[in-house]
Image (cartoon, rainbow, N blue to C red; front, side, top):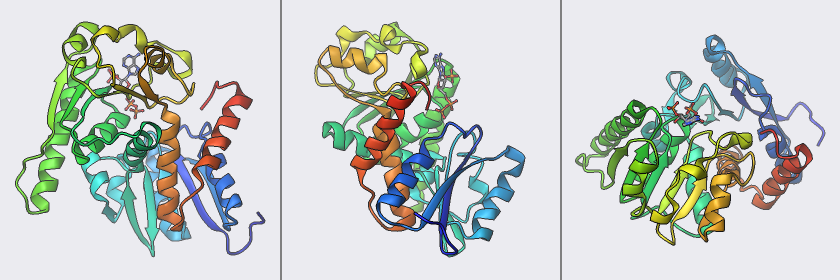
Length: 306
Ligand code: ATR
C-alpha cells in the first residue's frame, strides 16, 4: 500500500508500547482489504496524555487504541463513553466521529467473542471465576455482568483490590440501571474470595468459566496451574487466559490435559482488534488473517515477546 495525501490514520497510545503487536495486525489487514489507512504506535507519557488526545481530534485520526497505563486516564478527555466503557471504567478504543471523541471498551467484546467463537459458550447464566483485579479483570468481570452471568466471583492476591473492583462494578451498574430508568437490581451475584488454593477449593466446583486476568504465566513466569484445585472443578468448566505469550500458558495446558476446553488470550486480542477495526472503518476484518499474522509473529520470535 502506498501512502498518500488521503491516507487515514490510526494508532495505539501507551507506555511502554514498543512491544505492541497492533501495528503488525492492523496494517496487514488494511493492506489485505486495500484500505488507504496506516496504524502506528505512540509512546505517550502521562503528562502528555491530554495533548495526545487533542491531537487525535486536531489531526483528524479516525481513532486510536489505548493501552496500559492510559485506559482510565483518557476518560476525562473524551466527549462520550459507550455503555460498556462506562460500566467497566476503562477505554481501549477511541473513535473520532467528526471531531467528537467516543470511548469504547472492546477488550470486553474480545473476551465474549473469543468464548463464543472458540468454545461456543455464552456468558448468560454462567458462574464466572475471575482471578485478578486489575485492568483486564475490570473488562472480564464487567462484560460477564453485562451479558447476564449468574455469578461473578473475584479473587486477587491483594484482597482489597478484589473488594474495590466488586464495589466499583456494583456502583457503575447501579448508575447504569438508574440512568436507563430501571431499579438497581443487577441480576448477577457479585462476590470476592481470598487468594489461594484453599479458598478456591470451596468455590471452584460451582464455576463454569475460570479466567486468569493476571500476568502469571506471561513469558513462562509463574505457574497458576500449581494453585488450582483441579479435582474440585466441573468436567465441562472452560478455562480462559488473558495472557497470550505463550499462546498456551501452563494454566491452559493443564486444563486441556485434564479434558477441559480452553481459550487463549490470543483470541481476546484478535476479537478486541476486530471490533475496533469495525468501529473505525465500518468493515469486518478477516479474522483468519489476523490470527495467521500473530501466530507467524510468535513463531518468528520463538513466542518470547508480546
Ligand atoms: P492489567 O491491566 O493487565 O490487568 P494490572 O492492572 O497491573 O494489569 O493488574 C495486574 C493483576 O495481576 C493484579 O490483579 C495483580 O495482583 P495484585 O493486585 O495483588 O498486584 C495480578 N498479579 C500480577 N503478578 C502476580 C503474581 N505474581 N501473583 C499474583 N497476582 C499477580
